Image (tube, rainbow, N blue to C red; front, side):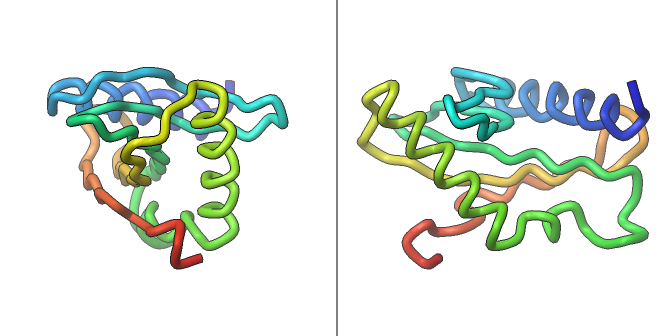
Length: 122
């Protein structure tokens, strides 16, 4: 497996552990809709369903990982989240978070952005 793929998997595992340690329940990791859209982590906390995009970079030399979550990626995540909520009949509170990780191996420098974007604003 290529280094960047392995780094991404390590980052997702690190992010999932961080969320669990922070009181979240992990419902799914790498969940794929029928159309093939993927959500890195689906978590739950305080009656809120949280769709988490994890971005891991070896360094910030070429920008922050969060910068990779552009409008197109947000729309992609919203489409996947819509499929998820329909399939699992979840409608109360939904939120989109981004976890940004920097480092070449765990422990990563982690930045959790809650409510990273509002789907109604796109």
